[in-house]
Image (cartoon, rainbow, N blue to C red):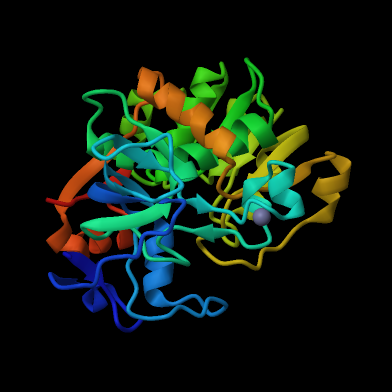
Length: 344
Ligand SMILES: [Zn+2]
């Protein structure tokens, strides 16, 4: 089959487009999908570069977000048929551990992400457990569907499940252009919050306004925590979503109101951050970690995507063959929203 694979870790140049990669093996509880679109995530860059704690058999196929049509079903699969158009929840669980039984999928002791721990969607075909797929409404475009799962389920869990945001609350989202940010802006807006976003690019801020952001903070002009402090009348915001980590945590703490919640879904600028404990106890701030989402959170978010209440932001679509160029764009953070690969 056609696929983009890598045989060694490194920069975008290690990605190779091949046409003779062996087909994935279908298990009894799986479906095989003819991939039509797959979206990039920052995770792809980390996996391609090599994650020190992740021993990955090579060659490997990236791609967590997949949309396409089912072209084979496993023997035990009763409720899905060949030809059905679907989108995939990229979180793979054991279904049996204490956390799975609680319905806390991303805490599964054997949690895996499609395209990270197992071969993903940068290919003509991918095999996934049947329980991970959701049917697409008729005519829902594959590119928009592929742009949705990982970032919407992640942002949904962050804002709705973990932060429990309420109408009227102020939510600050760092980095307007990332996929999770564009999803979070829309979800916070839908929940009735006032949405603050930061960026060094006025163009990205304007695009964020276009999808619902209310207050735009360009940190080239003024340190953003200072700007947020002024804009909220020295009260601070209720919730901050900070996926940057090392470079921003201090300012995120400063931007929160008393009793505020700091949500941490990642640490793209580095894992070790300084924490001023005086802010933590005096302002009685909660720091909440979160990653990915449950099948329920995936379905809740996708339902609103399918209804058009949440609209995946597709930055650009590249053909699969141009995966290297797509990675280059994501690496330079030129994108606003999701970069998608089309698989013809
Ligand atoms: Zn489990």
